[in-house]
Length: 196
Image (cartoon, rainbow, N blue to C red; front, side, top):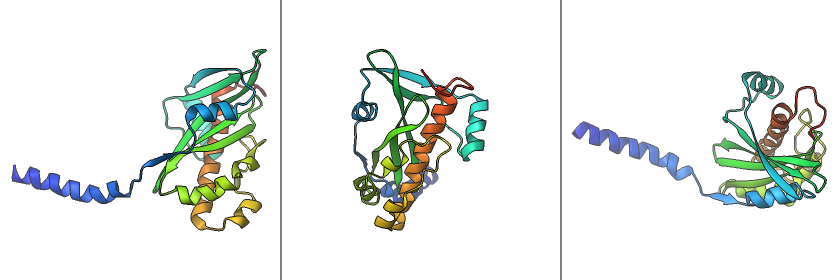
């Protein structure tokens, strides 16, 4: 019994530095507000769950080096009064050593980025990401599709030379690209140029 108690105490001591490093999340935009603002022009919203097969996951990995891990991805599809598709939005997250970063990305029926917003991160990462948000850096990616280069523009990189800010800019750019890839391989029928 003493060995079990000692092992448990040791495990708690060893785990405490890891637990102490995690900081609370900061919600910058609610999911609802992200959907409404990034799918502006939509009057009705629908949820579509996308499950990727092995073929789609392999294609995404080949295109980007990233393998989707979720069982399914939830797209919020916005339609106008004539039932035309305005766009689809998906939330994608990545966990870094300093905590999770979660991004909402809206894509048009053609698979091009309509807009993206950082919706959640940690208190620790907020000071590094806030300067990017102040520069409205995701606007530089509007119009890109999954084959685009989601890097910080020279304008933003020059204005924000901090290495951690640039690192998180890359993390967020990768999340926006992942959203575009999920749209291409999960929302569009094979061979279709545009979703209706």
